[in-house]
Image (cartoon, rainbow, N blue to C red; front, side, top):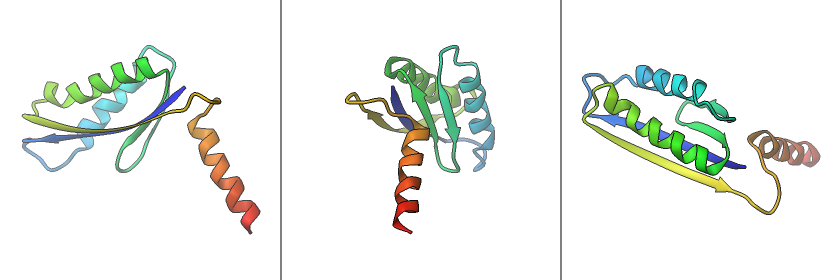
Length: 104
């Protein structure tokens, strides 16, 4: 299972607001058609699933602003593809929380 953090930034739009683009991308994630988990954050979206599925989804997310009239799109992708043992967004957060708790 892989975890991808993706930030898609439309450039050359008529507005500085990105919420319409973000909402459209969240709809695409809801309709992904493959088993994924995702979490929107203020600056990016984190997606968990099979790497090949996630890369296909990232391509769709990157194309989405063009479909909404953007002239240019800049996309940043971070991939955590751990293969030595299972990993998940939830597990990573729990690991940090456990360490914080034991340090107190």
